[in-house]
Structures are given as structure tokens and as C-alpha cells.
Length: 341
Image (cartoon, rainbow, N blue to C red; front, side, top):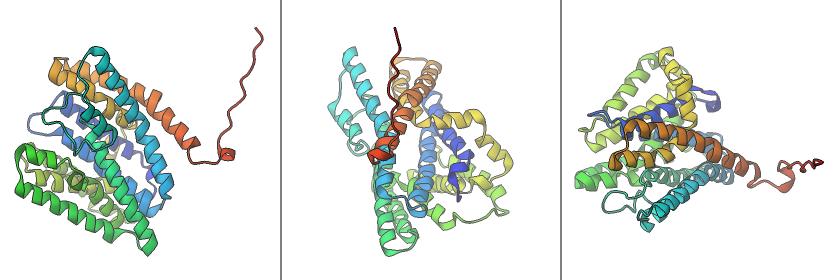
């Protein structure tokens, strides 16, 4: 995948990821963990894109950090502030631990003993991504200094993460294991293994196996997310299969590509980050306060789409246009036009 910007089906992949997560939250299917499946679809796509940016394009780290911050921080902090304000106004208890751990992207380590009282639990996956971005950027910096394309460095990280995941599964079980599998040293597997696959074969051409391999990999990855599947199998096989699939997606059969290029799926893929953020309060209302799932899903779609256009998109555009550029290079604002009364 040498020109990732022009692969339309990647937006469809995002759309499939958020659709799976919404299905798992609002209309769960017995047997299959669609919530985890959706998150892992996001992770493997993120690994592909970030590895391309850092190791192939070799984007300057300052630019990389600014763009990641512009992409994530404004939306997250507006969400945290508004949710905290709503909790205060409604007389609900505000957990300072939950708020601060979400605001510092550490809530995949710092979690309440019971269930989350505030709708911030889903920020755990953003915490994993933020931590992994830092690790990948440092590996990219090291790689640029010593030469090479980073293949060995990322391969070492993949082996380390897989080993830790297996050790945790050997020494823990139940709720304790579930909590450990939210930690970055385990949950980052999908990101780093996808990056490794990308570096191993990003210049490869289409092969005869792609027509069969991509659909089979997608099915295998989904099957690994069966609720009864052992946690290491879900992580290693599920994410591994999805990582291979997303890296070969543009060479899949036309039937598969057309599914991922389906316009509505691509559109919710464009909205996916805001949808992911803003679905959580409605998910909690459905799960704990009796809201009808169809209403919760509908409100998630409406509020998420509005947040994309009113918060995420303008904040990102403004920060990318103004932050880190000299004053002379910034777009000039037009002088106000004075109208006669």
C-alpha cells in the first residue's frame, strides 16, 4: 500500500470497525464479542497508517505529534468537560479518579474497582493508541539515526508484546486477566503487528492468493472474537488475521472491496472517531438506566455526526493551520466588512 491516502476502502474499514462496536454495545449478538472486534479493527488500521507515516514517509516527529494532538485532544477534552458538566448539573456523582485518568490517557491502568460511573471507560483504547504512538515515534527516531527501515525494531516489540500476553494469560484469569489485557503492553499487539506486516510487504504486488486470503483472514479474525475463545487466541490470532487482511485489502476480490467502498459505510468511517467518543453515554444509559437500544443507537449517530462537524473537524483544521507554523505562513484572516446601517 504505497499511497494510502487514495485507498477509499480504508474509510470503509473504519466504518466496519465502528459499526461492529455499535452493534456490540446496543444490539449484542450472543457468542460474538463485536465490541472487542471493532476496537481491534481500529487498532490494526492505526498500526498500518502510523507505520507508514513514521517509517516510510519519515514525517518529522514534531509534525507527527502536532497532528495526533490536533486529531484527538480537542474532541476528547470537550467530551470530558461536557460530560462532567452534565453530571454536576444532574446531581450525579463525579469521580475525580475517572476524570483525571481519562484526561491523562492512563485509564487503561487506573480503573475504578467496580463499574465505571462516568462514561469515560472507552477512553482506554485511545490511551493504548497514545502510548503506542510514542513508542513507535521513538523507534522511528532510532531507526533514522542508525539506518534501516525499522523492521527488526518493530519485530522485537511484537515478540515482546506477544510474550507478555501469554505470560499474563498463564498467571491470571477472569476479571484480573481482562484488566491486564487493557494494558498497553498487551493491547498494543494489534497496532504493532499491523505495522510489522506493513513493513514486511508494503511494496508487494497483487498475488493470486489475495482473492482467497483476505476473505478467509477476515472470517478467521472475526471467529477469534467468540466469547469463549481464550484471551491470547483472540488477541494473537484475531489481531494477526485482521492485520494481514487490512494490509492486503486493496488486493481483495471486488466483492469485498465494494463492501468496504459502500458509501454509507465510508461515511460513518469518516465520523468514526466522534461516534466512538459520543456513543458511550448512550451505551451506559441503555445498559444501566433502561433507555431503549434503538434510541441509544440513533442518538449516538446523531450526536456523533454533529460532534464531527462542530468539534472534531474545525478544531483539527484550525490547529493544523496555525500550530507550529511561522506567522507569515499562516492564512490571513480577512478584515471585517463594515456595512452601512
